[in-house]
Length: 366
Image 1 (tube, helix red, strand yellow):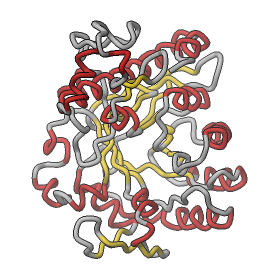
Image 2 (tube, rainbow, N blue to C red; image 1 turned 180 degrees about the vertical axis):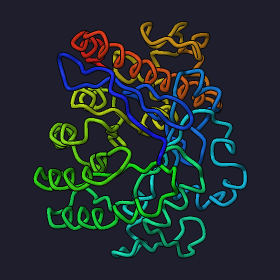
Image 3 (cartoon, one colour; image 1 turned 180 degrees about the horizontal axis):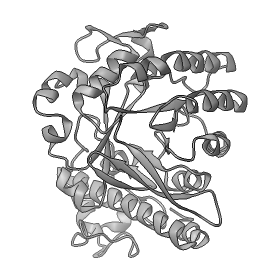
């Protein structure tokens, strides 16, 4: 049997927010939590010792990209992705389903699977539910995601329905392909259509997945369309399993989703924005290259100072970006990930202590 389980500890008295623990082969992950994205087995500009020091317990890597380089067979020979990258915590891998969508110009999809050209050398790649689960098994991760079809936004209701139906067709094949102890999460699709989401949540929840994700809500749709989908989908998912909202990462979006009952998040935003000199603070995102920081001998936000970066002034960080020093990207990444780590810690604390309204007020400008 897969050795991943969810333990519900408490529910917020003000919302549907849940405080829990995700038990994995590489330790307990306190929920709700955020996963830094390490597509190739590395979170850009930082090491696993940095990720550990900030308090993160689980990261996300990508099945498709790791299968291309260095190859899942090589990673397996190293003893799995944990040993290959030196990470002691838990790992979840995306199934490659996002690439099925993002590489739509070079792929042909059918009920059997997806054929597309490698982004590296143009060679043919065939990704089926069985192959995706096999790759993730070779990587030796704690949580594998099922291969699904994620429709882009915008798309017609018919297109969203067809993608959902293919996702449902593939779901049992994902489960049948897993190794005896391999944990696999299912994915609910259906676009922005409530009836499709209800149908998909019912079907995916009926299968023996080890957790359930809400997919297809971070593919370009505006926030005012994303929020209702999360709000009516999350409570339909099994209460005894972890609920994962894929690819959503603005602080306010995380707060909204947690209040709806979501437990897990990932997003490239904190690391990507850092590389473009944008820092998260309680006063909102700030541009570290802004002229206002040229002689500022202090932090960008006195309420967002973290151990990893507290010795560096705003003026110095601006200087690093101005001259193209890679240290600037690293410090900005450490700052943003520290901000997210604190956000998730404070979310868990607010759920446990019943102080959700105060937390929302604290992050109202973030």
